[in-house]
Length: 223
Length: 223
DNA sequence: TGGTGTGAAAAGTTTCACAGCT
DNA sequence: AGCTGTGAAACTTTTCACACCA
Image (tube, rainbow over all chains, first blue to last red; front, side, top):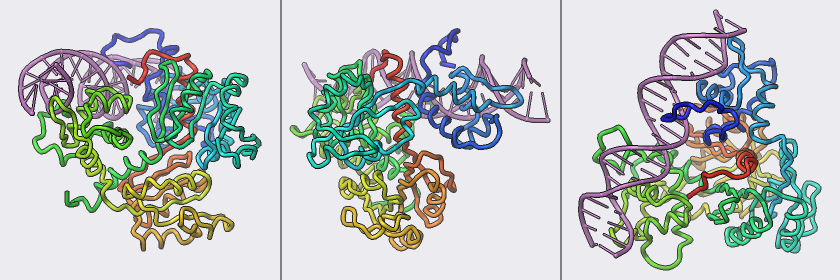
């Protein structure tokens, strides 16, 4: 429970702790990959997810858990519950801006559709790319973006452009009414605060890893 | 300083807090993108990075800071200091396994070389892909992986394969002596504990974002 | 004056340990 | 007998506030 505060009675509908939200998709993945029985213990889920069992139990207690003492959690119920909490049962029209390799990787990824993330538009500036089809969707010119977001009611915009144009794209997305932006460009974009922005920087991940790897061997490097 | 403990005199060589390590690459990016003066205040850095200024100061104090009261931090010193702390001054041979769209996106990204991450091998199972060149590097068959890791002394392995084979690839990488693995496959891989593993799941990021978007935006906006 | 460096407080997260249900 | 659900403790991270210095 949140420390310091005296316990909040109606916790289930309350916002989930951020750390829990970040782990829920992971659990979902582990449950999907789990063949076999109808039930799994927190211990088993923890092993698959690579985390501590107490953490799993606490996280699941937040989502309005369906665990049975002595038995474990019913997989089907748990999946449904997590999906509902994450809002994966809703339809979320989404556009991807920037059809380079990364944009393609995302567009090709078919797992989204089943999670409610429906790609309703792919956009690029490159005339050669425009008109081609990726995963059955035709790439449109960037000029078509604002109208498309509005008409197709896109709620999520994904930026996979070079850093130089990411802010402009973010402005257009925000101005056209998306609720959230997933930004893969290596730059911080600023938009009005009612639009959620999440930044994922692949090269930063590598740098963080490099730091840890560094302290495994060859530690003493001249300053 | 780390709470609870009574202050450690020779702090600089000690490990940095994990949260700080995750932000350092971000600061570095913001500094690189910063034209203009030779000095920046914590307030200015914070604004660019989208975080709180006190956090910036504390983070920078961990890396052995070079701030001048009343003036700010000398950009050049700061960059050098962060680079050194993150180990970006070292050469880190790296292999990428799985040359799909995501693998290509990473291989094409030229920013790595300047940070010490030198791609020394690209590997794939697909005979059509093998032999092609990406960013000047020829794709090799997966069978060549173990010998290549050993001979070229790769310390980092990047997995951009489908989930089904990620564990096998991780086993080969770990067995061939890499220090760290960056795993983009949507599955948790288990290797011996001396090998660092970092998982990045693009679709999970989207799901987390979806949760926030769903609740019509809340109060906690990133400063 | 303006901005760092940092104790101390607050908030958030993880882990432990065990009562209690099935 | 086994496993959940959860208080409470330990730890980490963030934020505040202000002494102190160029």
